[in-house]
Image (cartoon, rainbow, N blue to C red; front, side):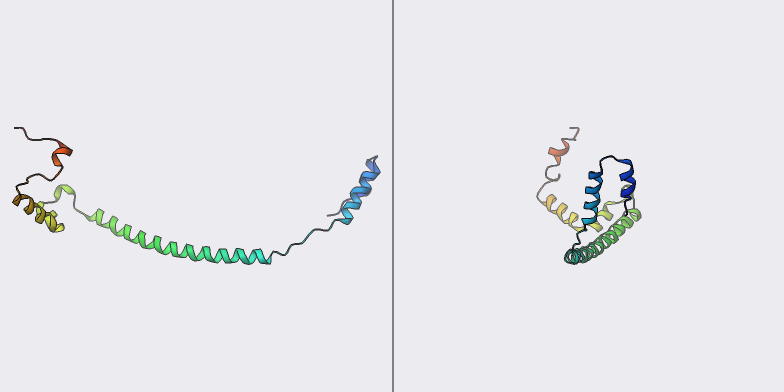
Length: 123
């Protein structure tokens, strides 16, 4: 960028200021920096970040696939009102085993039921 110092000499009275600025402008040399080392560090960081992002993408894709399967199962499931005791027992065979154990021990209510829901008997 060139500065027209003659123009400023013609409009300003203080010529010493213009001489000083012109002298400073002529002496000015921009400093150059060797940024190769910093660029190499940044490129290494970028490569590591890309590698981590790809690994994260793989995990997220796998989780998304599992969530889509779960959503499909939920959408295709029968409404709760349509389920029978046999359906629940088929899905969770341990329920029949636990129920049989409770009946053998004379327990007719699950542990903590009365504490949570209160006494519901009319008698």
